[in-house]
Image (cartoon, rainbow, N blue to C red; front, side, top):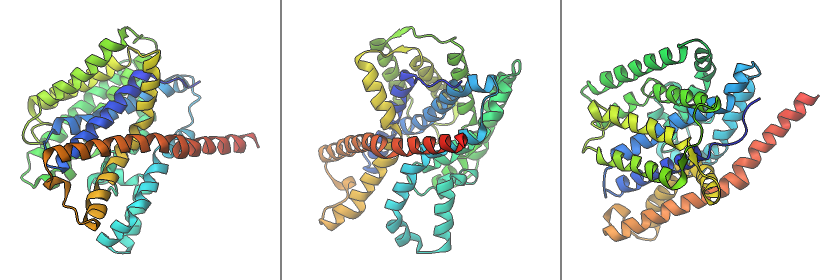
Length: 360
């Protein structure tokens, strides 16, 4: 049967990654600093953690052939959809103002609600900031059974992993060799081939953890320091241009740091007081990632102009940092509220309805 307990180290790292991405956005939007490696590799950590968590949770069930792809997709959809759809509806008036009440807007919302926009230019079709990664993530859900099937063959998993690394490197080189505007390069780059190796690498770590090959061995204090060191190293290799963060030696070093952080996280002893903190970080991850842009742009584009205030990018540094901290803390709090009172109840209701249908 599928494992039901959580890997607390992965929960903790997932929350740190969401905070890193949010910090990158808030610094970037306010023109304080441009920490490209923190934003890019913070998202790539999500892909590794996703593959690791899924392989850890479902690996045993797949081995004994008790895996239902339909049930898997249903569970994963209702993990992503409730908050994403709610926030899409929240920003709908703004989207109507941008695009008009048109057929294009209808299809845009339908493709986002189904997450099928991940098949084609998710960066330009995501309704929410950061939503592109969820479109890519859903494609990985569709690929997951095939990747796990490869893992059942001798050396199959490593062969697929090596192939996907070659695809990722080739895709990155092909995209950034073009002469195009940065926004166009971003759209071209943020496709499934650019991240599949991260997801597959995570699956390998998840399988190793599920089979007991990665037991706990790092104390919480040392482990937390190592994870923070990982983010510090990402900051240390940060270049002036975001393209440079993903190419050359920085691309390889950044990817290596991400895999090392996920490896360390799954071997942490986070019992006692750290258990509650880790669970809170894990529970807040998804909401923090999606909510912080809504708060920031809701304030800067709607509330502040109404109050006659200037944009945060025009404020003094101390005021900008304080506002960024308020957005970050507010998003974290709202994420916990959303998980407890909105997202989790929907997931439990969905599971209960599915169980009731199976019993008839």
